[in-house]
Length: 414
Image (cartoon, rainbow, N blue to C red; front, side, top):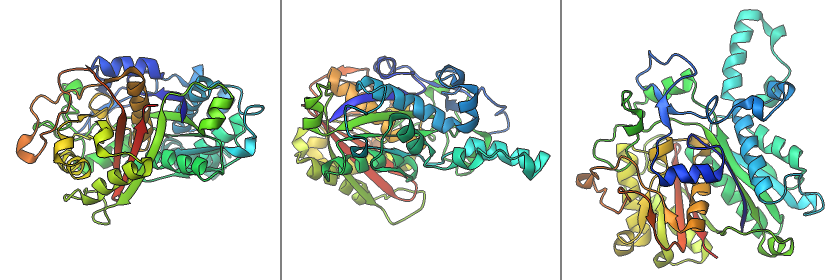
């Protein structure tokens, strides 16, 4: 069961604000402001640091020396989720610490600290490298720091599967509870990759949109005029809890994380499986794991990157997994159309959106989907006209990452 939510995203510093802006169809994509991006092909991003998130408002100067920005953003979201679940002071007295755990995903980990410290090494020599370098940059820093802060002594590790990282984290957390190893898990993901090297790398892959003059129109999932994704940063965190444990302590229950499916294309390191068979298998596995029939799915939160290959493939996968007739009945929308692609944090942030939409029985639109790319198979209901109030019983949330990693999460209204 989902009993707590936290988010730090380009459209808001908390789940309520985030959802409000999503439903209004607002864009959090802006020209990059923290560094000079003039030499880059893509100069826009979904920014969090310095705008939505001010580190000094959340951490002491001493703490900031020890935490990479990805960990700062992630801990801020984790604190929200734990407070939302009534666990702001930790689990002591509520859940035996060995039966509570922490699993977080990230694609790049402490890349900001790595780049900054490399400059220190080159300019000032090895003696000037901080002793905090290793604990700040390791990918498991967020999971470990969250466990320390909240006294979570059970399962604790990190998942790294590119854009599917935090989807795997949530799926693994679900399994820990189902296995009987834990009663409560804090899970999600964080990413802080809006830095010159990462932007240059994705530009070199020709993966990013170059619609720099109109950033709010740059992310165009399923639209015929899409020209790539927009990079973003942020974090999402969820508290997952065994049903009877949640009821016994009187926790508010949002909905059920009911199923987790995964697969791999075993094809190309960056291009998705054009046949869509393996991504569809992840969706079908999530439904099977949840004990749900395709007819119970009312909404699909798409990976929806705004790239030519992904959007056509994902539409095909939805049709395979749900069946052509049911695929045409469901609403499909892309959160990335408004916040960009948060890489390792994408699954968790989009999971928060899904939970809030189930709570409100409303789905957010796909911004900028003005002319669906029907010619290339993008012919489903992408909710282009604005937020839609509707019955939502079951939801699938998809995430597909470089390396061929496919994850689908199934949520169910109670």
